[in-house]
Length: 389
Image (cartoon, rainbow, N blue to C red; front, side, top):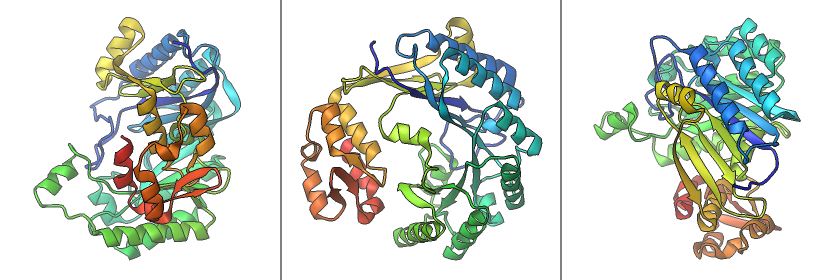
């Protein structure tokens, strides 16, 4: 398959966790002993196999993201091994952003210095809350004190670029608790902060609690009030909203996630990881595939053949256009109408007959070359997005 020959993003999934949070529907696994060496061998093996394929050959890596699970359970030596092989097989752009997700309680100054020395230049720390009561409810095993210690360690280890995750709209959470979380988080001057409203995903313990009537979500008005408070407080601190759930100082936006939202190519390594490659520089469609979710089976399959894909699908131009809009409207900047027309050969405003109605209703707006959600539209984004799936 001929591909768009340009830089791509690399995602590395490390699926192991010390415990499973009741809201989590990610591919994460709690095991008696983490097979770090065997899993790292498999990641390197899959990287080597993919590097030999035409769709990735002679292409440089623009961003790397170690996600999970809890990637910070792995030693810097294992992370270094994969980064060294990626540099040898592909090469990195000079300003490549390399992020590692970390949980408080799993990092110390020595480990963070090790990550820094092996090439990690951005840490994403999963704080979620600084309220002991909410941390217990969310099933987090770390304490607020451990989060504050980890943030201090991140700063002392030389990471100028780091991100902090918070969860809000937790059942029973008060606006005062949210204010406290924001105050503590901002005291560490993070250049990037993600604020996710708690969503109850099917198949999780929280979903079963909800179905049984033992969990009562916050009301819509309370959730909107919290979202407004977050945008206000972060804006006052110089963190601007650039995506539905993400805020950053100018220049500190997550370039890895921006590549997803802008429809760029990415290669996913690891158990359950997803990948996407376009069919060519001037072709709107592309191909997606995803790996075996079981870590043990993933390790076995890579050892057998170098690959562990569990499924694949072609994305025709019409579907690709819908996905492009779905992702692009998550961004505060919205979508370039010219870029959309160049890629898909269609007028975006004619793609869905509802778009002019949504503009009239105040959910969307056109400014210059860009279509974007309004502040009102952001509040009902999920209801709008279903039309593009």
